[in-house]
Length: 80
Image (cartoon, rainbow, N blue to C red):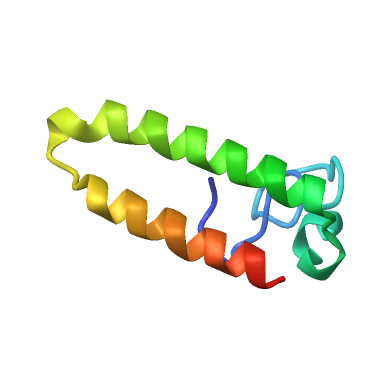
């Protein structure tokens, strides 16, 4: 992943990324996401955080942080 505000390799806006491959405009326009897209993103996000939590438990990262992030993102998606 890239840092926020520095561009993406996919769109060719990241410094030194070269040729543009595509556009992220569909993903940036949250108001146009249908319920299926929201549900699929929620499922992907939950699976990703579950995997991260399992892989980081031994390193001492707090699972409560993951739960809080999930809750905040879900509330944001439900509001849109």
